[in-house]
Length: 316
Image 1 (tube, rainbow, N blue to C red):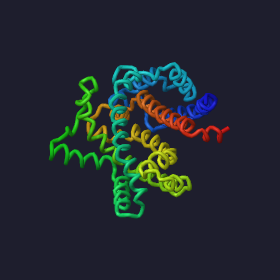
Image 2: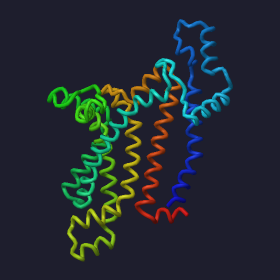
Image 3: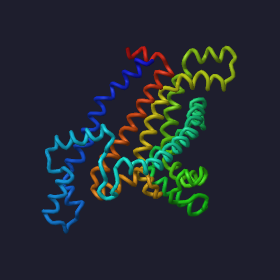
Image 4: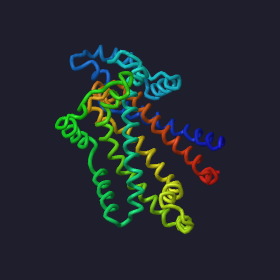
């Protein structure tokens, strides 16, 4: 197992190199002078040249990349021009709301999708199956921002059950913290639940037709035990894949929902940085989010080997 883990970690080195290179190039080949954008229309050419020199933008691009990546390796993502603070500190202050939102949304998604997917597979071809698959199809088609606005109007404005905007940190109390995150988490989680439901149903259908399931039923095992212990356990790997992918998309896709509900997370941070052309913050946030997604994929990959030893054997 340790050799398998070491192999997966070593395989990330070229991936991280390509990721940092792409992030740096996308930011620096964007049309427009960052120094001129930062200083505004009334800035003189001399002021623009001076700021470009301070930011190192007048140096060759390969030299800028080497300087940036060397700082990143040491844990220095640069300083924000507008916020007057290190980028890493700004990310620490904003990553909490995004992480809480993503975890709660994923929890909602799993609570809804796993039972619905198992029931749809067990009731294949019935009215229950058609209804659940129809709802999941609607869930995949509705954009998260439209669902967020619908929840705000119905649950927040009409029924007045939950606040429609704002945020309270966990230090203010768990239930108060949860109170402000339920609506945005539902807006994100329902869409992810639709994807996981369809994958759960598909994976369960493949397993339910196998011989060992028929044997388990022939032995007289209870249907609940056959579904959960035997069928779901063997159908879990594809479900685990889509769970990891959806959690990564929750972290990256929370930008719009955070803006609608005015949650001070990474989404708000990167939107404000794009408007200001604060390159250091943009690069830092994109890099951190990318590393989170890569880390999630790595954890899922390692869980494959833990759940099913045959995965480790196949990759030798």
